[in-house]
Length: 178
Image 1: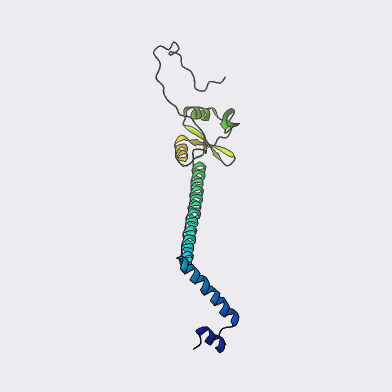
Image 2: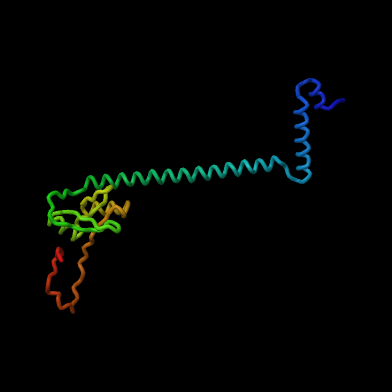
């Protein structure tokens, strides 16, 4: 009786080339089985590893996208807070100087706005390339979201008068210009 392979060849269902290839694959599988490994186990492990790696990459990408969406939402909230609470400073004649990073910037404001800035009732916020005056309450809300946006927010602390201070009886004005 002829083998199944010979029968398939005679029937014309398989050609010689395909039969030879199948025979070589069976020999390879037999050698691997003799060594104690199965090629199917290796390929299953590889597929499982690939699946886990892809899942981890997808998680990281999803996390990055979520963080970008949150950043944009916070920036939109900050922009909206600044636009809603900004104080107009038209007709100012006093030059108020402040630092933006390593640069010194100048803003012309009125005397009342200057007093409010010095006493901590107003703050300076950066919106794009412009600087806006805000009430300190709005500035504190913005600082909770992004402290870099608020350029200047003075805190007015009442310090106790030293009993031994010889100049305690003299009042020093807050808006003293040197």
